[in-house]
Image (cartoon, rainbow, N blue to C red; front, side, top):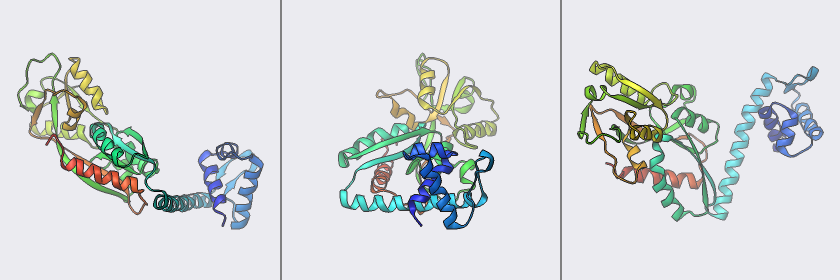
Length: 302
C-alpha cells in the first residue's frame, strides 16, 4: 500500500473536509478525491460516506485512521532516528510543562544549549491535564507534570510512562506589605487570611491536597483566588491581595530572595516526567530528560 495514500486519508479525516485537506497538503482537490477513491477500491470498502454532500467517516474508516496514524508515526520515528545518526543533534524538541514547573527550565535549557546548540525548543505551558493531552496527541515528546496523573486522560491510556523527579512542599508567600513572617506557619493560622491557591483542570492536584489537609485539621480556608499560574498568584500576593500557596519551586521565579514560610503540617507536591511507552524518543528528548533528572536531583532549594 502506498504510504502517501494513508497520509492523504489521515489528513482528510483530521480536516473533516476534502477541500481543507487539499489546502493543508498543498495539492488540488480533484487529485486528492481520486486518491481517496483509489484507496477505497484497493481495500474494497467505503471509508467515507459522501452521498448527498454529507461527509461521514464510516466505522471502518475510523479503524483505518487509528491504524494509519500509528504506522505514520512509526515511519516518522524511523526517519528521524536515521537522520540523527547521520547528521547529529539538530531539530526541534517539543516539551510540555505545567506552569508551576516552569522555574526549573531556564537553567536546564541553558545547559542543554551549551551542549546541543543546533536544537531549538517548542514549549507548551498548561496544567497537568492538558500536558497529558498534548503527549497523547504527540504534540510533545515529553511532559513535566505534577502527580497524580489526571483521570480525564490516563484512566483510559495506560501507555504513559512516569519518571518521578522529586517531592517538594507547598509554601506560603505573604503580601508584600507584611513586615515579617515566621519560618513555619500552622495551617490554622494560615487559613485566617485571604488565600491564593494553585489549581488546574484535573480531578486531583495541589488544590485538593490543600483542601484535604484543611478538612483533617478542621479549618475552613478563606480562598479568594484560584489560578493554574504561579506567577499570577505571586504577583497578586505582592500586590497585597492575600497569601499565595504554591509549590516551593515557585521561589525560583524571583532573582531576589522571596519571603516565605513552610506550612505545617507539610503538604507535598510530586513532580514527574511523562512520556509515551514504546514510542521512539529523539536523542534530543533523551538527553534533555537525563539533564532534567540530574538537575532536579541537585535542586538548589533542597
